[in-house]
Figure 1 (cartoon, helix red, strand yellow):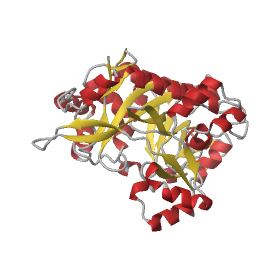
Figure 2: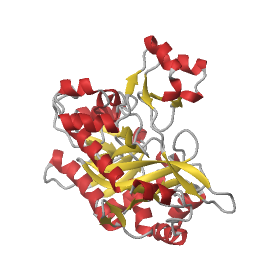
Figure 3: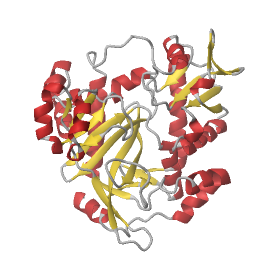
Figure 4: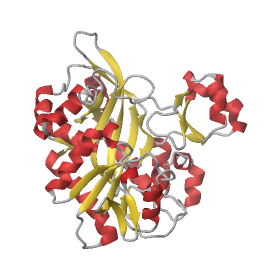
Length: 403
């Protein structure tokens, strides 16, 4: 089936999305929402679906399950033993190629799920592993996830008010999905506010926006440790608000130094990982090293084999393909906090845009995961070094299993 998926991905006319249906769905949210997406973010949604094989899907799920078991081991993370929620929207990002599925990174506040639910709804039922996934049950799973986060820490008390928090949220590229989330919570009777963290206040009995007490915070900040967001850091540590995801979730899953341990068989054995999980991770997680000055000669000589990522970075900020490095940038990397991950080539999807010749775009695949369960799978089509949402014909894409 890998050959079938590759063949379909090479045909720009296969699985072209119905733009009229997508526009109708977006208009159904509201004219302002439609404008935010179509006029201001023209490359948010790709023109085509991406095909994967059943074997690639199975390998991605196996890697996710192995990671979940490893991070649950007692020696994985030394953190305060406070009662905690699980963390919403983990994004397991993969590159797929002829050698299989390769986990590139894990994100603890992965964006795009609400938008991809809209895309799936507009085109008819999507599928995960042969099972139909409609917009209705995707959104119900999302709502249940937040309700469970609340229940884990607050029991049967009613969840009344939720804040979606990001820095200058109206300027964020994925801000349209904040509106989708707000609507979903409102339909469930939960007041949802979209706020900048600077507007929040910490009081003895909780976190407030003016006179409104906030029960739960959906954290979309890229200040993962909350060092710059003292109100939320203090509220989280004092248990005055349910914060999801929080710095402990980031440390357990998304800190890029975790890729070093996940790709090292000896470390996994010392942690007590199961033999089959070690084999799965060896096949599915590209070898990753912590960058140190003493590795200068080796890394420079083999730089074309490595992708360099800042430990605390996000998106593509500060990330470099080794074959694009200058000596000057490499010296800066050596003196900074970076990991080097062996390059796993992304898949390719051919697209046709207007009258231009067909062109091959790169793609990665994101699995949205909660409590070890894959809720939704989406792809991102792009041109260049990393995903950027600036490529004509690119953006978020449906994923179809070629069966």
